[in-house]
Structure formats: C-alpha cells, structure tokens
Length: 300
Image (tube, rainbow, N blue to C red; front, side, top):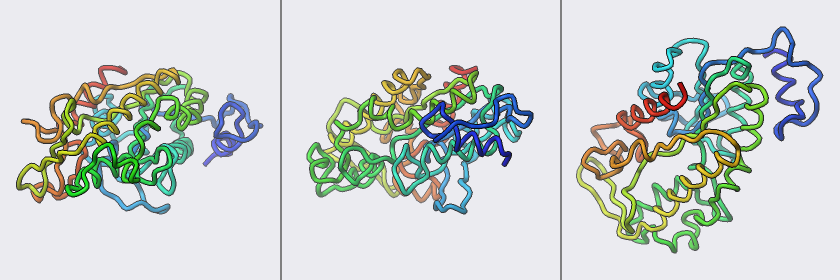
C-alpha cells in the first residue's frame, strides 16, 4: 500500500471518514488513477456463500450481477474491475463488514481516482434499524418462515423485525454519506449508483408466498410486516440517492413480476435440493442478468 493511499484514508478533511488533513497532495506521482468499475455491497451483490472472518476472502458468484456487468463493460478479469462486495455486509451494523470497511479495502487496491467510471453500492438489508436487534434480512427470512407467529405488523413490537418506520431516506443517507463523499472526492468523474434490491414478494397483498425444499409453495398469511419492510427499504434507498446527489438503479422494476412463487421466479426458494449452492431469497441467474443489463444501459 502506498503512503498516499494510507494517508488519504486516515487523514482527509474532505469527508467524515477521515480525521485530519492529508499532507500528501493529489498530484502525487503514486496517486492511483482508479478502476473502471468498483462494486461495494452485500450478498445480493456477491451472490456466493462464505463465512466471514478478517482473514477470509469474500468470494463472488460466477453469475452475480457485478460479474455480468464487468463483462458488459469489457473489464472482466482485468485490473480495471474490483468487486469488494461481501456476504453479510451492512451499511454500518457490526460485526459484519461495513460499507466503510469495503471502501477502505477498495481504496488500498487503488480503486478510486480520476479514471474511475462507475461505483455501484448495494447495502441496507443486513442492518439494524431503530431499537430492534433483528435486521431486515431476518424479517425476510426467519420472520416470514415462522408459520406459527407470522410476520405481521406486530412482529416489530415483538422485536422479530425492525420497525419499518425507522427506515427512512434521511436515516439511510446519514449511514452511507461518508462513503459517498469519499468516493466523490477521490473519484470525481465516477458515476455513483445506489443499487436497489429485487422483487422478492408480489406486492399489494398481506400474505407472502415462498417455495421451500423443492417440494411445494408455502403461504405466510401474516406477511404485512415483511412487505412493509421491503417497501420501506426500497423507498429509503430512492430518497437517499436523491439526498446524496447520486444515481439509483431500480432493481425492483427490472425484476418486476418475477418474485417468489411467480410463473418465472428470479429469486431462489428456500433450501431447494436442486440448487444446493443457491442462497435462499437471493437472485437467481435471470435476475442478476436483468440487473446487470439494466445497470449497464443506465451507466454506459
């Protein structure tokens, strides 16, 4: 790691991540020029199983949307592409990897500079919101799968999911602002895009449907809480992007009509033996293809 990269992360007055003014000017000879495509995100970006540790490499699926986008941009397998997304990553909720941590690692790899073209961010589902210990991902999975208690509007009061009212655009923007400002400062020509999450459940209803074990579909009749949670998160991302002055990619629109239990689901069901490596409730390959194609059309 060059002295400049280390210094600019720790000693920058331009953004909240840094603590003091860097003594090295931006015209330094060893200043990184940046990479064409940089991806920071969670398992919806990485789309590969891994147990996190500080010594583990975050693996990425061969069919993930960042991998597909890198091919469309012509940078796959080159030094002009960096995917730092990690399963379990969050905006700022410990103990998982955070957006700031991924940004720091990307910076060490020379990701940000005057030649950086696209920086895509996908976070929020692994975060705690409000006072609840449960995350939005917990609501999507364990709360929905609880066929006894359900995942209705009372689930938040019982601590089994975040209070959807705490998921706002302003709160989301505050939690990722330091990362966005840092990227803007060191990659001023880059298009920064906040990537939304795909359609998981069919909207406009109180019940939610999901496939399980490759056998049949189950219906959770009390799914209002989960539906409100994903709706709130989607709205918060849109509003945060506007507040921060960056782009937003509408993944939900790109995958509309292809949620769980649809005629052509683009979301993995729960523990399907026919798909042993698939992460439950995460994008299947057609969903990642749609996202990559749509995002490429938006940023090229």
